[in-house]
Image 1 (cartoon, rainbow, N blue to C red):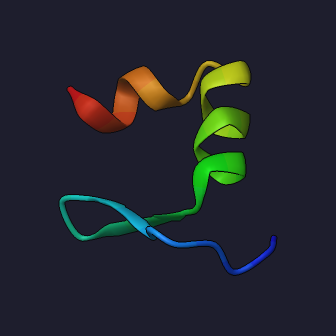
Image 2: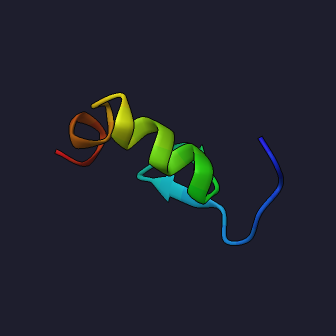
Amino acid sequence: GKRTIPQIFIEDYHVGGYEELRALEKKGELDNLIK
């Protein structure tokens, strides 16, 4: 994806930017990362 600021981390996992965060949410994978 594009290099956006801010870069998002969940614990030690690098998500990326907002677009990557939204993609994880749409695929239903975000909830598993934040549990």
